[in-house]
Amino acid sequence: MTETARAPKVDSTLSKGIAILENLAASNGGKGVTELSRELDLTKSNTFRLLQTLTTLGYVKHLEDKTYAATLKTWQVGRALVENLNLRAVAAPELAHLSQETGEAIYLAVPEGLSVVYIDKVESLKPIRSWNPVGGSAPIYCVGTGKAILSHCYKRMREKLDGNLDRFTDNTLTTLAELDDDMAATRKRGYAFDQGEFRERILSFGAAVLLPDGEPIAALGISLPDINMGAGGEGHLGMLVRQAAESVSRKLGQL
Image (cartoon, rainbow, N blue to C red):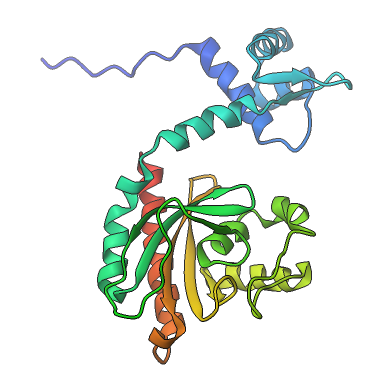
């Protein structure tokens, strides 16, 4: 007779503490003991003890109005996990596919402040090509990879960009009103399009790589001289990079 498989034992105290932390992390403001205990179906005394432990460990802070809120320590733990992911290895098949489909320069970029940094690339196969080195950077608001990332975090980044929209070409977007419209169009299309905004006559397309919670952590990009752009090329290249980025995002969600 086969013994029925037993479900793994879950530590109830740990699971309740994590439930409190997840609840606070998802909240726009602080919450009190009574509110948390009601929402999570816990006793007030148990909720209070767990909050004290989380506060001591630095994951929760006690606010002046007597409520509790999650600290950035939770974000720091998650960020460390993201940084330890080998994005280059995860995205390598998609970069190779984009290269095969287009023959143009393909990039993997990550955000760093108001810039993006290129952490991997596949060289263009064409005689007339665009060029950026691995380790190079570009302003986040005027290249395809950067604008793709920016479109997913624009609300919190917009104020930081005010006064920092330097002009690089005649096509550079240098006002927040212009950038507002471009971000709306980018979100609607599902990919970003740089119309020679950083370098004259160099076009680029980008789509963001997202974590399961929607946080943009990278972007895939296609870069090419405008002379290489064929009729109807914008929609085709945009679709390719969007599909590739979606593929990488799905794989990250399975890790």
